[in-house]
Amino acid sequence: MTVSITAPSTRDRRPAALGGAPAFPDGLPLVRPALPDTPALARRLEAILASGQLTNGPTVRELEETAADYLGVRHVVAVASCTSGLMLVLQACGPHGPVVLPSFTFSASAHVVHWAGGTPVFADIDPASLTIDPRDAAARLPHASALLATHLYGTPCAVEDLQDVADTAGVPLVYDAAHALGSRRRGRLVGGYGTAEVFSLSPTKVVVAGEGGLVATNDDAVAGACRIGRDYGNPGDYDCRFPGLNARMSELHAAVALASLEALDARVAHRNALVDRFKSVTAGLPGLAFPAVDDGDTSTYKDLTLLLDPPAFGLTPAQLAAALRAEGIDSRRYYSPPVHRQKAYAGLGPEPLPVTDRVAEQVLTPPLWSHMDEGQIEAVAGAVVACHRRAGEVRGALG
Ligand SMILES: *Cc1c(COP(=O)(O)O)cnc(C)c1O
Image (tube, rainbow, N blue to C red):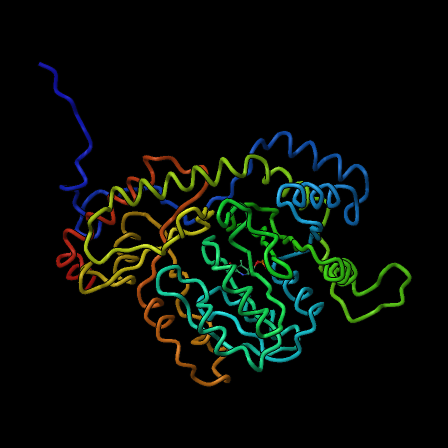
């Protein structure tokens, strides 16, 4: 007779918070950047160093052309970060007044409004997609000079409705697309919507440069202003047309970004498969839901964010985070507190944002990265299931 030794099933697993063996004794970080083929990249970096041209060179141009081809847009301008790219775009669009944007986003979305000379006006989000609610945005737009929307976690916004709302108000629509390089709205890549879309290549994103950003636009004037603006506002004759930034991307960063762009669609597909696996392992758990991605759309799943209803799930997001930490599993509360609750924006006064405030109480983001394997995501999902099943004891053990 053969005895097969199998791992304890999810059902019987004792959570590490209750003394069980941790799912990841060596720890599972929130993200690990995907950098394919390091030797080829190292050779490319060596060649750049040997050339002596570390900025304003052919690698940045190659990245811009490659990204513009991939996205199907007229212009891509590589910049030092998504934050600086958004500052330059807003400056180019000239919104020196109120800018309507979601509070349920990363803080940089609001900071860029300030740096471009505007004032953030926060709008609420759609309770299903968690992206900006077009109707609430419309209600706040009459006195505003621009609309700034975030493709949150990679979920494409309701771009058609937002364009209608922006056109009706007569204001430019700009996208913080930090999470969405590789996302698709009804099959079409995000990047060509609105006046401009700005991607981030910082290390927690799906495509990485180390640090960097990409401005994508079909608007010649906006592209031109960003090209000059990333170079202090100097078009080359040292007679600056406006006060710009140093927001250039270096050749070294562009080489990393080019390597990271390779096989992006396959990586996005793998991330979606991992999310499907997570959802099937946790299917039917009471009090656990996920942000909705419209049928026919593709999210990069920059983040896999869970929505917990504590009375039904048995644990608050903070309690589940602590229980996962005992398993060696890292997590974040993307995005809590929402921007309008952060100290930096306390001076704007309280805005009623009921959906944002409710959702911010529910979010927890466990690890997801592009080269994670199915066993790892199953173990994360299994830990969530185990913590739910013994939620009462876990709550007691956490004190
Ligand atoms: C990361 C991020 C940014 C900032 O990107 P950087 O490249 O780090 O400047 C802006 N908006 C959102 C939504 C982000 O997640």
